Image (cartoon, rainbow over all chains, first blue to last red; front, side):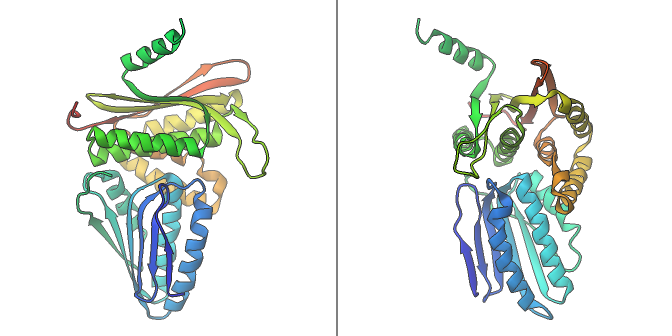
Length: 133
Length: 192
């Protein structure tokens, strides 16, 4: 698989995994009715890709979510763990946690989640201001 | 006279600063629809991004708590997999100081003491402690999905500007009416 893509909906984020370019991205909002079933295929694709990175690949993962609910927060925690574990096996992984200016709830959470990342490099990035949409 | 009762209700809601109110059957589609209207309302009112995200975050957790846990429910008809209808009330107030998101639903008498204890613990924590507790509960939920109950309440408390408020009103032998209220203050007064 060279790419995995899901378009954004009102309640689910855009998933844009460019495996060939080693650039993976989640953006938009995440409060699905059933977070576990929405993310199951996303993790299936990700896990397969991360296995191929073992022993020395590199990738960049951007988390650009402007809003997610508590069920999705649990999913993000799993995501960070998977990425960190892959980094522990030798891949060079950069995780970018983007938050909107003025959204200190997201900034704080990024800081808190980032503390548990040991092997990957975790970056907190402030997004450019938007129209509030 | 037809319409009088409804007009009185509307007047009472207005007087209390309630800009949006829904009482009745709830499911995920209701959450989506009201959520879109709420977002649009805050955009039109030019509420800042920080406050809009907080209000919306509290609204979603309040709705999902009712959809999952309200003790007032009607079983779904086939096809299998359709969820039960749950009943609850959500009200959003808006004033110079910001927003209030209040939700109410029935809970079983037997569940009241533990729910109250849990909410008291959340209410009495500061921001830093809430964040640590949030992460701890999420992590506990990874190992044992049953133990993550209440993580939505922590999310609400994290996004609220003041400690959450809650109450239990006795309805009958079986049920209490549970209310949870979160206030989100704007730093500067909202534009009219």
